Image (cartoon, rainbow over all chains, first blue to last red; front, side, top):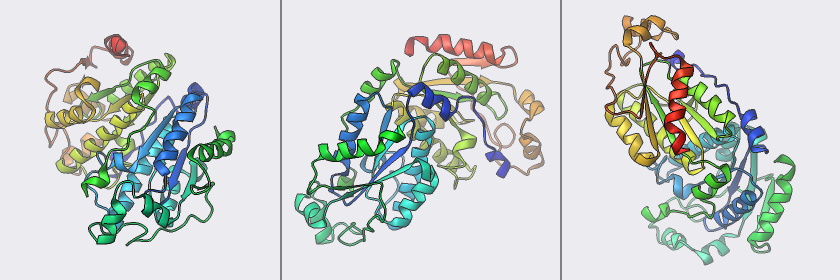
Length: 195
Length: 195
């Protein structure tokens, strides 16, 4: 079936779209524990970028699981497939000239490596939202840690499944010491030259 | 697991993005036989829209099958899943404020109904590229019809699998009578009020 998959070339390219948008496109990937503050910071970052007329789109784990990946479970295999599809979608958005923001626990180093491989190293910016487990569990905004402790939720990152700390993230946020506003300012200054 | 899927709300919405882009977003879906000219017309349409500073992105069957849907076959079940994922991606692009162009054989009426349901009727514009089978087979740009006739390719639309003609497409193109340029002018005039 190989030749059914022949690549179709289109006239309008990423370069054309970036030129029209007046900025470059790439993926800003937030990783961290559930309740670490990924979505809060991602949302505020998108707001600030939008104010600067940057074309953005946010891919959120909770939202994608209502559509594109709705048949997938939280097993390791399905989490990998969830992230693979997310990365493939991010790749399309990058090609469309968009700054893609993604907020996913993405606990395994090899998962994040796979994402980087799919979108291309030069298009991948990793942001580690480093919030201690105790703090996330104390906040427990969605009541998930409680359910993980009682065993109602299996394979829960930090409780019954590992979180592998990023070795060399582009930006690291310490949400105990930094406010979301400070975190976003730090990210904005770090990505400025890439826009 | 339902509450893991709680919808995350973001500040920047489709309305904000449409306002920044200065046009509305929707999906332009091309359906028709293999070799009918869908991709050629889609490509020219995107070029013309880009010249008008419209933010576009094209989802192409051949290209998506190299990434997001690469594990899927051409069985009816897998074709449905291929189109379901494509529609879910189109929905994200519409939400991002983009005019999405998609060129897929999409032979079954129920498949196309599913796509319309996913993106929302108000966001769905169907274009039927109506080229007679004999013409497509004579062109046979990719050499696929020959392989379908010998049986090397199974489930091939028009030969060994049905194509269900759209009942009420938004635009119908007769590629025997209309050039790609004429087809695109017709589409542009029909979608003008929606932009």
